[in-house]
Image 1 (cartoon, rainbow, N blue to C red):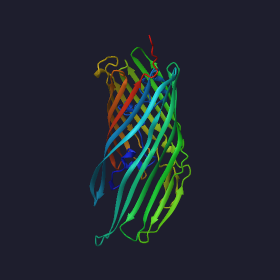
Image 2: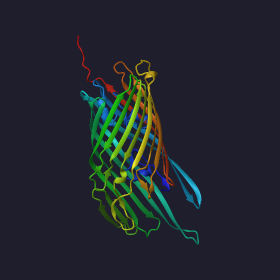
Image 3: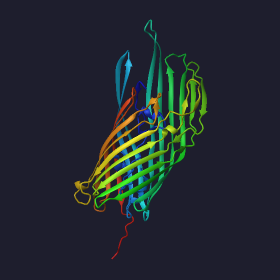
Image 4: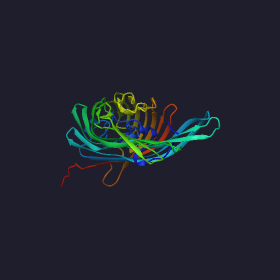
Length: 431
C-alpha cells in the first residue's frame, strides 16, 4: 500500500494509513470500566457507571447520586510492511505514538425509574502521512530516468454530543435512547511530484464538513433467577441516515517551469452516510461479584455509498461497494472478590476482554484490515473521608490490525478513566 509511514499530528488520535478510507478509523465509544472488558456493554447494567453503549442502562443509576466520567488514552503503534525489491522480500518497521482525550459523560436519576445521561464521545479518527516512490530505470544502461513521489496525508474526524434517557417501564424491561449532534470535518490530500522538471505536479485535496444528528435506541431485560444469579439481555438499534454533507475534491495542477497552477473543484451532493447498526448482548452476574458478558454488533456500512474518483474518466461521484458490513464480537468479564467488604483489595474490580471484528472498508479493491484485540484492567476504588464510591479505571489493550499483502499494525494502548460518584441528591436530616 505504501513504501514508508511517517509520523503525523497526534491530536487526531491515530497514525494509521487505514484511516484515509471511509470516514476514518472507528472509535471505541465505551467508557473506562468497559474498556477493561474490551468494550463490552450491551448487556451491562450498573448503578455506579455510565454505559453509553446501551441507553436503556441509564434507568439503573442510583437515585441519590450524580456520576461524572472522563477518560483519555495513550498508545504506541508498530507498523510493519513487507515489499519485494528485486524479487527479495524487504520488511520495514516503524513506531508511532499518540495520545487523545477520549470522552466525558455524566448521568443522574431524573424521575423514579427514569435516568438521564449526557456527554461527548468520539466517532471516527483520521490521521496519517506517508509516501510512495516509483522509479523509471533505463533497462539498457541501468540509469535512473525519473523518480516520482506520491505523498498521502490527512487529518480530522467526527465527534458527537448527546443527551439520553432510560426508562424502566415494566418488570425488568427498560427502554432508552440517545439523541446526538454529530459534527466534524476531514482533509485528505494526495500529491504526485516528479524529479523531472518538465512534468507537472498534481495535488488532489478531498474534504468534507459534517453537521448532522445521530439517534441510538436500546432495550434491556433483566431477570433475577434467585438470590445470587441475574441475567440481562440487551438490544440496540442505531438509525442509519444521510449526513447532509457534500464532499469536495479540488485538483491542482502546477507547472514547475512557469509556476502557473490550474484548479478544478467538484462536489458530490449528499455523499456521506452513517449506517444502520444492530447489537445484541447478554450478561450474567453471580452474587454481585462475577459478571460475564457477550456482545455482537453489526454495522451495515455495505448499504452506504461513498465518493470515489475514477482516475480514468475523471468523475468524482458516489460509488457502491467501497464499504462493507462490519461485524464485531466481544467477550468480557469482571470480578470483584467481595463488593461488600471494607478491605481495599477485595473491592478492586478485575477485568478481562477479547474482541474480533471484520473491516468496514476496502483497500485497493480488497478487504481492509480485520482486528483482533485483548484487554485487561482494574477498577480501583477511591476511598477518602467523604467519598468511597468513586473509581479509578485503568486498562491495557493490544490491537492487531492486518490484511493480506498490506501493512500490519500492532497497537498497545493504555486507557485511563475517572468515575466520580457524588451524593448530590441525598436529603440531609437536621436533628
